Image: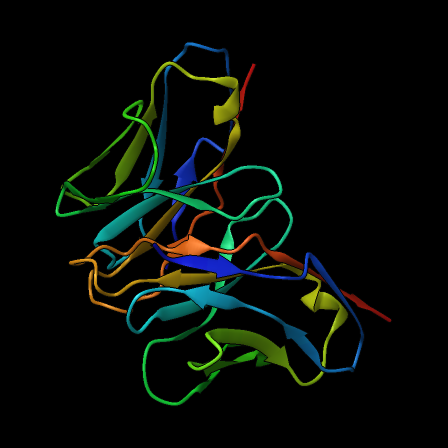
Length: 113
Length: 116
C-alpha cells in the first residue's frame, strides 16, 4: 500500500517564476493538506482540500493556491516566487472523519534563487 | 488561536535511560493532540495522538504520552531510549471546533539525541 507521494523531490526556481507541486494521497484518504516547513522551523499550515474544495486556509497570501482532483490527488501552485518561499513543502492526507491523523509525504524541497 | 510550545530545542539522553520531550498547548475547548517524528530529509512520521479517553496514550516504537488538561501539557515519553530514536520531534494541536477543518499547529520541534 503506497503512502503519500509527492513530486518532484527537488526544484530550483528563480524569483518571479511560478511553480506547481503535486501530491497523491494514501490509498483510502479523501482529504489533503499542504504545509510549508522553513529550515529549522515546524511545518506551517497552508490549506486543506476536501471534496475538491478548499476547506480551511492558513495565513498565506493569495499567491498560494491549490486544487484537488476527483481522484483526491492535489496540486499546490505558487505564483510570483519570492526568496522567502524557499522551504520544504509537505503534503499530508487523512480521512475527513474527526480526529484522524494526517500522514505526510516526503516533501518537495523548493529553492528560489 | 491555537499554539504549541516545545520549550527545549534539544534533549540529550543516554541509551537505556528514560526520555521525556515536553509540549504545552493553547486552544479553545478540548484539543486534539499529536506527536510526529522527522528524520533528516524526510517527511513527518505519526507517533501517537490524544483525542479523548485515557490520559495516557501509547503509540509506535514504545512511545507514550500523557495528556494533562490542568497543565495543558502533552509530554512524550519512552521508558528506555535507543540510539535509533535520535531525531526531530514535533508536537501538534488541532482545534476540533473548526467546522471540519483539520489544521495542525506545530511546535518548533525538539531535537532528541540518544548517546551510547
